Image 1 (tube, one colour):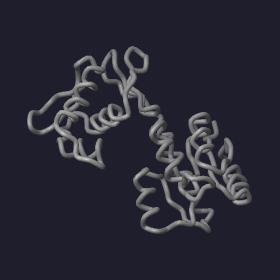
Image 2 (cartoon, rainbow, N blue to C red; image 1 turned 135 degrees about the vertical axis):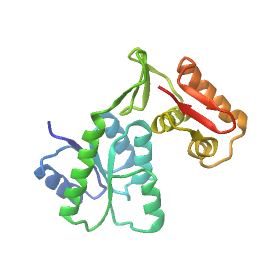
Image 3 (cartoon, one colour; image 1 turned 180 degrees about the vertical axis):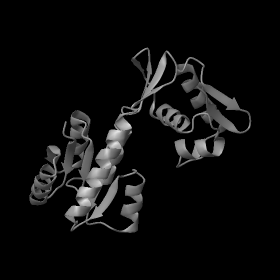
Image 4 (cartoon, rainbow, N blue to C red; image 1 turned 90 degrees about the vertical axis):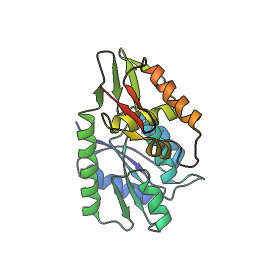
Length: 222
């Protein structure tokens, strides 16, 4: 099965050239779009393996903001192709954990290599898309969803972030400082806010798996 690529590019001629080249490399181009809103919609509907994302898009929202919205819903590999190489744009892009950041005019061999790496990483990650927690609970990494008996358990955005952090460090201590900075990067939460979030997630896990290390932090055990 061909791996799917979504192209987000606001210059139609450039979009056609990229699509032609990507198709020649053996990928399936699901569609090309020129703005962030269409990129978000198509990413969720088509679920491509890789998104080739221009930073400068038509409309109020740029490609990096679109990537942030998409990644909040689906873990899809992003390859940026842009004329912007200033530190601010690069720092914003890095925060979305892209597979690559290519500047225009891009080298076709670099694009081919970046696509290959992104697609292989996607394939590797999809092989272990579900984490088995116990006979009842599991975690769908692709959709960032907790499942209980095969049914999705509704998690708020903060609960998803906390569970993802604990899963990334399972069987290891996640200290309070790391937790608070990851979940609330723009503000300093009070102790009740942190404890309340942990308590709500613990309830949805049927009061299992999350161990509190007094005065230090938390650990996911399974």
